[in-house]
Image (cartoon, rainbow, N blue to C red; front, side):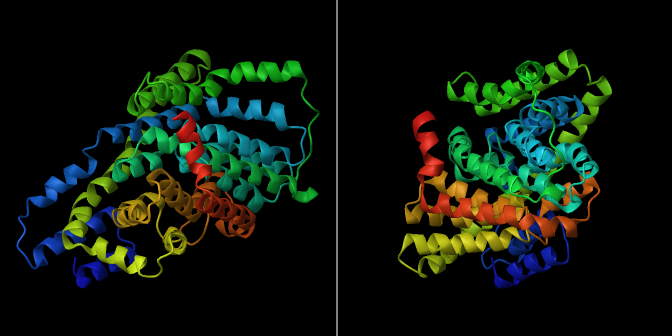
Length: 425
């Protein structure tokens, strides 16, 4: 790819051109202006190759599961269960929001979907109890960040497809980092001043907790069904996504009876729209990845980064700084699609386990979802709770700081991401 094409790519992104169309346009210009002649049929072939991966079938199915849960009243069941456990604690509603997002993360795989689902319910509730609205939005945004880290995860599926690694091993690698993030976020909420702590409810009796658990049990069992089925070889990762969607559909229509035929249509429509946007990006990345490989620009970038130091840790720090910067301006999926073809070979050359490297990439880009100017979760939380994004930004920094601490720990201690896959996967 020539310098001119790279500049065109960056210019189109800067003026707000869609990332997918930018990749297609840049690839086509590169083919037209290339030094050696390339048959134009390579474009449609590489576009098809970009999505011709069986593992990607799981993306629309996991998104559909989340949409069904939101419309079938299953999110409310999780909130009531979390409230029965944590309602007596300081900052009860913020703690409930985080626990609900942790459980939602084990089902939907999408941070944006989790933020929209819980934000519509929890942010107004927190505001009614006197919580600062910016803080309420920040709690929802931080909790929703767990969605792509705790399995299952749509970005993990994309990474696994692009880096050719095991989806189930990558899913399991997110368990410990996700728990660390959750514990730190809970501690941040517990240390908030009284004006951000609402009021404490009476401690629920064991009978009340038992009833709430029984009502929420069909939802609580869903992550166990998904991960357990994959772990013991009962279903593949794609079949597990289908099982999750069918399970959520049955629970929503038969047990909660809140999901109508119209709701099924709306959930399917919205899931299709979201999945189409993701898969279009992957398709558009096909010819771009091919051109990068053909021009060997990825090897040149890898060589440039590698010459910074012979110490693998220094090179990893440079990669982390690059990804943190990229995450401030690009959403995770476009960033992965653009940069993974270059970064994955660098990780291989450094001798970094591809699962460990995948968690490093994902954590960096998920932190970007909490930071301006793009910060997708900031905008989704603000829209869901009708809160100014500027107010959320002022309150998000303690959560970002803890996320950076977890990132550093994962980089320095590979076992945090590799222990579970090695002993369970």
